[in-house]
Structure formats: structure tokens, C-alpha cells
Image (cartoon, rainbow, N blue to C red; front, side, top):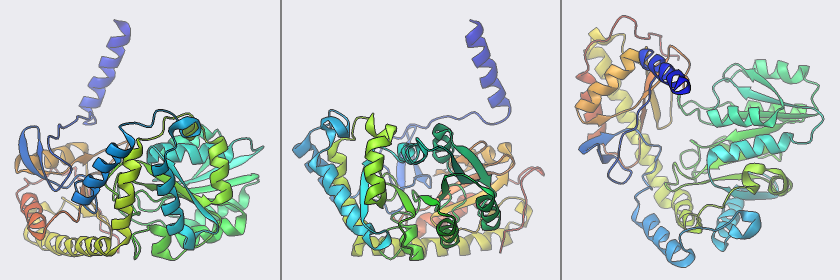
Length: 414
């Protein structure tokens, strides 16, 4: 019982710190309006930015994929699990990213988490010296991938190209990887990719970009951060997630053909994992066509309009609720991720609970997902939302009680 007692003590500590997590049971498809724990709610929680998770065309493609390919792949990609559906998806993505990387090739992966583990561990494997330079606010999968690589890891301050330049200049590593989120998942802000790429090309480094929250949202065709910034380079290795804007599941790596061939040979999280069901890849062909076509453009316009309504409404709300001057620090985000920083764990849990009581579901995000003292409501918008939904969210915020003096307060950066 001693081992169980130790775990119980640690769980009690998490509870006391306001850090214990819990799951909610969702009984309906992903969407703006859901049933959670038996009650209807308006959700601002998912990463389904374009509302494709329950799109009729995607659902029909998934059903067709099941009829054509069955339920599972049966083996890893290198045994017998690489289906025609996976191959078609990879070829489609490679064609799309051709303008942004010479001799582009794509590799289908089960999850974005595994893709980051695969890239970071494989590109440093067998090197006599390797160093990974990682943004301080990178996603947990990047942090874990860097640990798995066993390479030297240097963390540079968030979005600081000056600090990174100094680290690269001082490094004597044979292989250098600069890795960053394109859109930081808890802040909604963008990495300075043009400056990062220039540094990588100057110092002979790879630029590994986790575009999980950029793909589908950024760029004229929704191809993400590379398209948004108009970048093209053989130094770039891009990871894109297919369970967010694409609405299904999985991920991909896009890079120069030589890089992808190397990953197929050396990336252990790819080699030793059963391939994702081919039906998912078949459905994703439709998702990607939607993202890059006229409907995708219209859905991104819808998102932009919702963000304008939200930000204007929030500014008015803060003026009216002067007693809540300590409520939010709205981080400067132009993406569907709109975080309201409250600071203390107690404050953010109270706010999330109060919103849920009003039928608005917004999760409380706390350490270690975000730095201690910056607990927040992570509000995410979807093209499935309406302007009426945004006003409902604003009304829910207006009904919040005043927060304790310990709430986080910081002037919103210009």
C-alpha cells in the first residue's frame, strides 16, 4: 500500500494547488453546440477551427473509406499498413507544399505528438554532435522530442531572435535544429519565421516548424505559416496536424524528399507504430480539398469576422465592468486562439466553473501547460460559431463575479 499512498499524497498536493485535472464526457459530435455530462453547452474549447469535424462531405468520405479499406491498417507502414489512401494523401500534400520547399515530399503520421518525436529524434540520431534550439513556450511534444533525441538542448527566450542568434553563433555542434511552434497553442501568437529561417540558413541549421495551429487557418489557401509568410527553403521541416483544422486525425511531415526518405529509415515513432486506419486518410483527402478550395477561404473569412466581433465586444465589456479590471489580459492574438489570462489557479477555475453554469464551456489552462502565474481561459473560435454565439460568450463573461486581488494583471502588449 505504500506505493498507492505515495500516489495519493501527490494527488492531494495537486488538488491543493488547484492543478488537478478532470475529464468531461461529451455525448455529441464535435461542434459549437454540444451535450456535455448530460447538459447542452456552447463550446469554445475545440481546435476544430474550420468546423470540419462534423462536415457532411468529410463524414461521407470517412464512411466511403471504411467501406473501401475496412476499420484498421493491420500493421506498420513498412510492413503492410501503407495503403493507397495514405499514399494519395502524401502525394496531395507534397504537391501543395511544392512552392514552399524544393523537391517536396510528405510523410503521413498517426499524431502530431509522434511526428515531433520522430523528426527531432531522427534528425539528430547518429550525429557526433547535435544541438536543438527550442523556443521557451514550445509545445510539450517538442520538449519531449528534444529529450528523446539525447541531443544538447538550448532554450531561447520566447520569440527572441536576438538570443537565438547568439546561441547559434556560440554553438560548435555539427548538426543544429531550431524548432518552434508556428502558432503558439496557448497564446495564439505567431513565431517570427522569416527571421528564424534567415538565421538557420546563415548558420547551416534545420528549421523545424510545428504548424499544428497554423495549417488550415493561415495563408491564402490555408497551407499555414509557410504560405502566410511566403517562405521557401530546403532548410525547413514542417509538421502539420490533421486533427485540428482538418477535422479528422493524424499528422504529416513535409520536407525535401531526402529528409522524408531519411525519416522513413530512421524515425522510430514512425517505423514501429501501426499505421493509422486508411479510412482516416481517405477522409482527409476531402478535408484538404475543402481547406484549399473556395469553401476553406469562406470559412477563414467567417473566422476573421467572428474575431472582430469578439475583440470589439470584449473591449466594450471591459469598459462596462470596471470592477473586473483585474479580470483579463487578452493576449495579442490574430488567430482563433484567444486567451484570457487570469493568473491564479483559483481565479481561472472559478471563472471556468461560472461560465459552465451559464452553459458556456471554456476550459481553465494551468501550469505546467502554461507558466505558473499565467493561468488562463483558452477561448478558441470555430467557423461553426455564429455571431450570436460570440455574444452569448460575452454575456457569460459579463456575469462573472469579481475576482480576488491575486488575479493576474498586466497591460496588454501593443
